[in-house]
Length: 299
Image 1 (tube, rainbow, N blue to C red):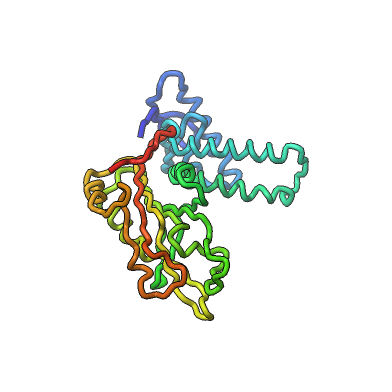
Image 2: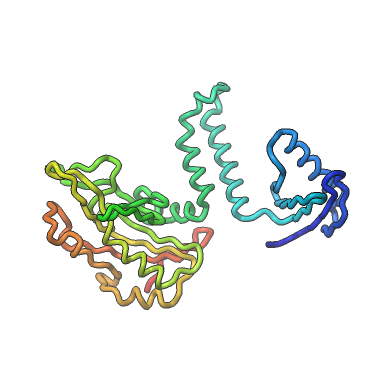
């Protein structure tokens, strides 16, 4: 953490007792300002003040019995991203309702969909940026932290899922999944593994080992059955990769110079009408960079 200033002041009077600040910051003015904010916070019953942020600085406060210690640091990248998204959310709200003068909250409920998307980005800024990148690569509907079910009934959360909708033959009425279930066949899903830092061979192996166990529970011929599915692709996205990752991936079978996992065993013996005969899950690897420099990795 980059510390730009430290000040310790008396909690009652606000008088600075020790300070180490860059030029241009008046210790007494600063401590008086902090004391005033703390006073208003208590008066408004908001609780004790622990920190606050300006456009450029973040002030971290630690209160003891008689003194308060304040650290001055630059605002973090995460905070800056969140603030930018909040600014954009406000801009879109005003744009969508520029001719609406109502002060009734019920008149703005349709903004909920837009707000939910922004909240998702604020809560998961890195995953949200990767989601935008993945959508550009594949299209489809991208979901973060998607829960998938296994035949045992256990749930597994994957970092990201790309779904292209449910695809069944029009004359096949033996399977009737609900509208909210993911598709049961391989052409409809891409499962993604995301790592904001460096990803290891062990992580890759664990991820790929889970891909043949997902499915949905559906009603078929009056009975509840487990319908397995196999993703058409698995995407691995990270900033950096251990060399052993590519050594492992090169040992997988290939088709047209692209590595894949064989999923033939998943549907064997189940008698599922329309099941893919030779399902393959192709492996895509992307190295993520900021500023639209992300790219596919050849291995």
